Amino acid sequence: MEKVKFSIDGKTIEGVRDQSIMEIARDSGITIPGLCYHPEVKSSGGSCRLCLVEVHQAGRMRVVTACNYPVRETIEVKQETPLIKRLRKTILELLLARVPDSDVIKELALEAGITETRFKKDEGDDNRYKCIACQLCTQVCEEVVGVSAISMLSRGPDKTPGTPYKKASATCIGCGACVYVCPTNAITMKDSTGIRKIWGREFTMHACSACGNHFIPDAQIDFIVKTTGKERTFFDKCPDCR
Ligand code: SF4
Ligand code: FES
Image (cartoon, rainbow, N blue to C red; front, top):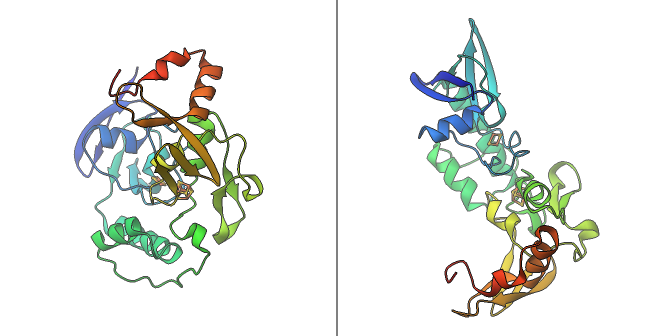
């Protein structure tokens, strides 16, 4: 694996060629803000624009998204600059206008010193009051889970994830991966005594034979057994009791 060395705000760090600026920075303990990137989801990133940084090379400067910019040679990356601070503030204001009720966005905005947005606040329906349309949920469902139960519906400001025709999806396995990756907690999933509700469907949950915890939907067990050949008995106990 070919190594690459570059600097972020004057600090030299090292990664593997073609890793993104974001990946190498995070591995090196440097925080670059970002909402739509997840290391386990290859197709993620490039949507929220919060991770903008300056890349200086051979006397030229470009503004790029750190989460999907592959490092191939020595570059100088800067994020503590007036331009990047201004751009990120504008992006936060735009996000605040899209999802004014999102606590996650409100907190990020506050950290950047923003309490109000200059842009007109959206008055969308309740279903998307926290969704920033980053697509991480649909990407994880397709790429990591391998189910593709949800996709982005509608266009423009109404673009949000959903099941086909907003009907209960026969392909969803109730795993909740979409909920776990959503950066703004925009997807509702409710678990109560053996039943999980998500995307308009109810899933029966499998109980651990040792502690009794309902830890995985039966539909997810069926899917894993069918696609990987794993023994059904593997799911007799929850990960904590195995
Ligand atoms: S529900 Fe969450 S993960 Fe899905 S597009 Fe909206 S903000 Fe992104
Ligand atoms: S984290 Fe890079 S664009 Fe969202």
